[in-house]
Length: 92
Image (tube, rainbow, N blue to C red):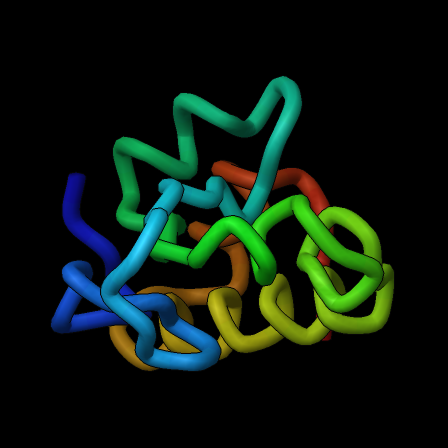
């Protein structure tokens, strides 16, 4: 997979460790495939993915920050309308 947020997907997006990496879909559920198709994914270590209270799945504020960042990056080269067609929600 390719990420619009991360050049080096061989390390955790948050702490840069190279151990126990997982792919995280920024927009999950029914938007999981759209996340893959458009590069709305990052690599996270287990601790930052789902194995602690500081994980993106355990910390709602971190989850929202990642969604906002992804939308901002996408909108550097696309319109808000294009983003809304894909994700159906504005996070900014």
